[in-house]
Length: 270
Image (cartoon, rainbow, N blue to C red):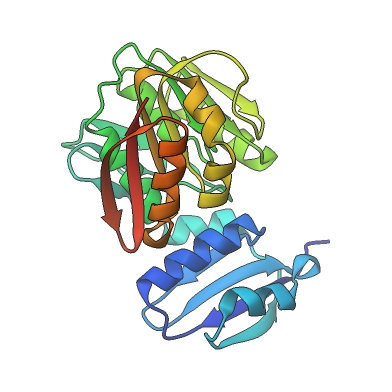
C-alpha cells in the first residue's frame, strides 16, 4: 500500500528562510518541497512526521498541516524541474530537457530524492567556485556527494580520480546512475559517513552543513595535499566565524568566499 504524506504549508517566507528550511528538513528525512509565489510546502511520510520537531524548526513562522495521498516524486519533479545554468561554465539538466548549448560542461541528472541539483544556492556556489580550479589530472574527494553532481563536474573538468561518498543508500544509487548517464569512468562511489583514513587528495569538496564539517575538520585537513584546495558550503553566513576558526585550528589557510541568498562557499588551501 502506498503511504500517505503530511503536507506542511508556509506563507510569507523570505527566499533565505525557504533555503534554510529546505536544507534543515532535508537532513531530517523530509522528501519533497514545492515553492510558489505565495507558498512554500514541505512533505514527509505520515509515519515519520514529528510535529514537535516541526515546531522547533518553524519557530515563529505560522504553518498549516494537511494529510495528502501518496505522491510520485519522480513524476512531480519532472513536471517542475528546470535546467540550472552556472553562467557559461556548466549546465545541469534532466534527460528529458533539450541539450544546453554554449556551456563548457553539461551534466544530465535524475535527482529523485537526493540533495544537489544545482537549484539550491550552496550547490550553485560550489559549481561556480569550481570554475576557478584546475582539475586536470587531479585526485578529488566529494564528501556528501548527494546526486553526485559535483563529482561528475570534477571528472568532466579533468580530474582523473574521484571518490564520492554519502551515508544515504538512496543517494548512492542515484549518484551511480547519474555517473553512468554522464559517461563517467573515473569516479568511485562509496556508502560511507567518514573521511577516508588514508590517502591524499588535491581537491576536497564538502557541501554538507556546519556540524558535519566542524566534526571532520581535522580529518579533512589530513587528507588534503600540501597546497591543495578545500571547498566548503552548506553553510549560512552566520556559520562563517566558527568555520574560519575551525579551519585555522587545523592549519588551513583561508583563500576566499562567495555568497548567494544567505549561503556561503568558503575556499581554503592546505
